[in-house]
Structure formats: structure tokens, C-alpha cells
Length: 118
Image (cartoon, rainbow, N blue to C red):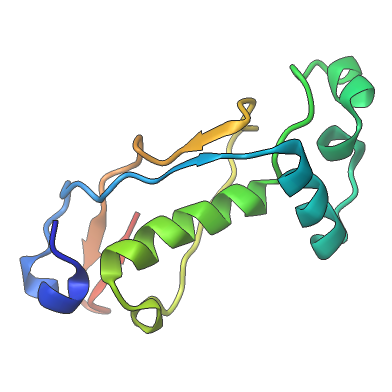
């Protein structure tokens, strides 16, 4: 697939597939993210607590998975400076330790702002 640096906006269409990005999130990575972000909620750090809350174990932070979505888009764009803003909404908890961005919504084009929404 071409990157945005070789593909101009007019050639991007709703429903166009983006390259997939798979990540294997480790407990150590979750701990490092908790420390860096200051979010030390025990569902991210304490296996016993997370299980008592009905989770299968510790879970990754929503913003960590958002960072992976950001990486998927900037990899596709080919130039990180082209991404001016990325928004997301967390509607459910991701219960897997594996974050796979292969499943994603179709991009929507906003003609007035020349932006794509995922």
C-alpha cells in the first residue's frame, strides 16, 4: 500500500483499508506505561485485583491502545507531521493482552476540513 506521502487526499476513499498493526502487549510494558502516565489503577497492575473485578487479568490502558492506533495511522501516512489530531472514544474495555488494529472502522472524509476520521 502506498503511504500518504505518495498518495494525495483526493485519492483516499471511505472504506479504504489501512495497513494492519499487531502488538503483543506485555505486563512489563503495562507497568512502564502506568509509571509514565501516573495511572496506577490496580486493574492494570494487580492480577488478583483485576480478576476480582471480573477481568481475565491485568488489562492495558486505553491510552496505550490509542497510541498503537496513532502508530498505525502515522505509519500509513508516512510522515508523522501530517497527523494533526487523532480522536478516539473508549466504549468498552479491551480484555485481551493482544492489541490488533486489523479490525477498524471505515475512514470518513470531511470535505470542509480535508480530514479523515477513523
